Length: 118
Image 1 (cartoon, rainbow, N blue to C red):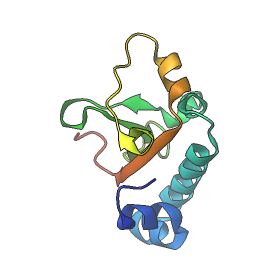
Image 2 (image 1 turned 60 degrees about the horizontal axis):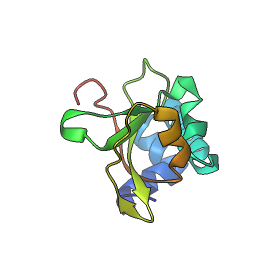
Image 3 (image 1 turned 90 degrees about the vertical axis):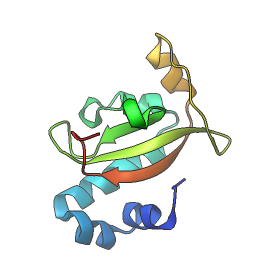
């Protein structure tokens, strides 16, 4: 799921992504979306350490992100975890693996190039 039409377009239309972010990020964004789509649960994404799935804090509390082009890249894909199409703020507790094994639906909020500013 996507938060709005423009986010969906840039995430699903390679030419739009390439125009906005360049070839390298467009390729990696497509691969990231494909891995999220193919994942049975978020634990599958979490196991790909290069993508660095992580919780966000401060004004983005309740959101999660994956690095689009590895940890040194400034681009990330930001999303909410959903439960039957409703945004939910999970209390993760100490066992992040159990949490990620439960998550099956996400809503992509944005592709962000403000990795270190948020």
